[in-house]
Image (cartoon, rainbow over all chains, first blue to last red; front, top):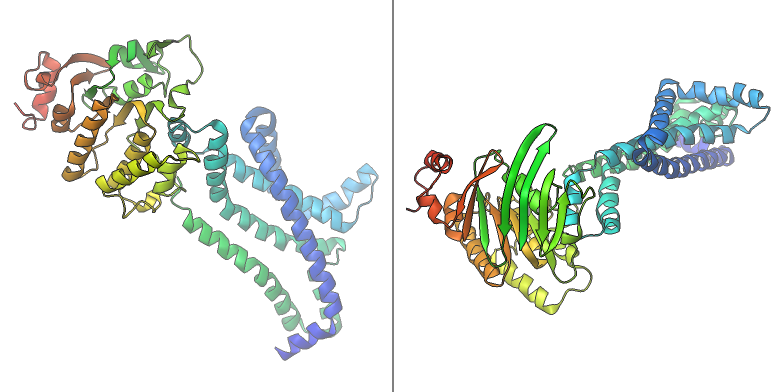
Amino acid sequence: MSEILKILREYRGDFIIGIVVTLKMTILIWCIGITLGILLGILSSRFPKIVGVPTKILTFLFGGIPVLVFLYWLHYPAQTLMGIQMDGFITTVFTLASLNTFLVAEQVRNSVDSFPKEYILSAEVCGLTPIQIIKQIQIPIIIRQILPSVLLIQVVMMHSTLFGSLISVDEIFRIASRVNSEVYKPVEVYSTLALFFLAISLPITGLAYILKRKYSFIK
Amino acid sequence: MITGKNISKKYEKVYVLQGVNIDIEPGQITVLIGPSGSGKTTLLKSLSLIENPSSGSISFDGDTFIFPKVKEKVRRQFSFSGTQTVGVVFQNLDLIPHWTNRQNILKPLGEKISTEDLSELNTLYEMFNMEAFIDKLPHQCSKGEQQRVAFIRAVMLKPKYLFLDEITSALDPELIATLFKYLISLKKRGTGILIITHFLLFAQNVADRIVFLKNGRIHEEGDKQIMSVPKTKELEIFLNSIKGIIIK
């Protein structure tokens, strides 16, 4: 333990940079993915042929390609083909935010499509207007239904930011590896790294399971 | 008055209702009886325009909808502005799952609830023994408790016509008696009530008019006498199959 604290003290500046970069990427991936995913999910459900089918195909494609391959492809061949050069940070955010968008969209579309019609009918019979039904019944129920799985996707997205290290992004894993190459204390260094991820992931995963149990009564 | 003329309803190629003519009059309790699958719930849904019939016409106090000419969903009969034209309690109840029972009753009434309504509500809570579960979520309650919430929710919207599908199925005898008294009081206030029930003793006691439906057709209708002296073979067979629960 004292060894871990010693390393953390000694390389505090580097670790802070790594944590900040990882958190920046994570927050961007979450915000972009969730916002666009919700929009795309609603549009996919509303326009199944024009938006739904292409989204499904792209989701299959994304699901079939390992994240690392996709990241490398976007960072090297795609940029060469387009004649542009982007920072590894942007490529990582773009790749993971795209993946997050499609995964969240799929959750939203499923939930909207399978929304129990009887609740809508029940509300209509009680005289609620279409706007009231969307605001007071559909949105709250859909949020409760998708929240656990969307939270779990966000944990995976945060973990996937580690791939950024392979295209030279100075995120926490790359910093940890660099520190380890200097001090050669892999147990201490990577345990610290694991603790960092656990500290963020565990509350989110725990919350996802609690919400899943709490809202299991919704059809 | 709600008038259904020559109502037919088919799902794919199967006719569930065939040429049904029925009136629901204000201040009268009409009970629909018949074996399972006879089309009772489909008739209730067609008469309330929850589902448009395939053909025929439905009139609400002179407002006539002719099918299949009317294609769109008709929902103005449910809009609430102090009163409602038609109120419905479904067999599945379908209370909003993330609202407490109290919210299920109050939210459809809107932001401003009159003192009279609040006092009426408190009377109903007491009458139907609802204090113990009124602030629970529907899934935390028994079917009988949910039935009472769904019933009070519909009643508080003051519908001119009230349609009830299997409202007694999970109520104990004491509550059925309370419900019976309350339905009679609603009838006296001019509400036209349509009840679907398999509980024939209840039907016989509460009904002003009984309609017997089988295979999507009305085979017999009349006052409660038809339960003790049926005129058609179909009703006789139906009543014989559940012998012993009709008051002769």
